[in-house]
Length: 130
Image 1 (tube, rainbow, N blue to C red):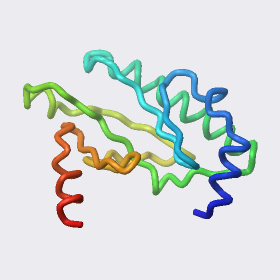
Image 2: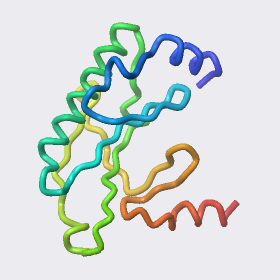
Image 3: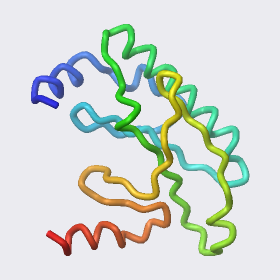
Image 4: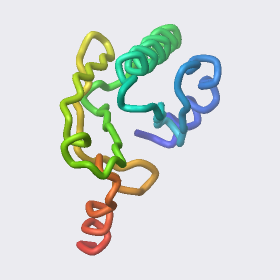
């Protein structure tokens, strides 16, 4: 929460040493691991994401830091036009500190509100309501 937490995080944390399976973005003390993959191969890729989350958790424990699982969520961005395929059930379970991370329909990343269909409707609504 404080400016010092951003400094401490950036000073001590070399994200490239921990996240090996996913791509990632970092802003202050926020880390966004992500992975792009074909829907038919999601099971393998979910395991890769979980492996990186586990490594990140171990690193945090080593440095006496902690994720807040209640502040974490994941989205599945799907650009497929076919509604049936896009709305297919994804049995994705990701954990931090033995607690499942909730799947969210929309979220904010770097000031942009995204939804799972990548429509930017939520972002436009938030900007318009300001």
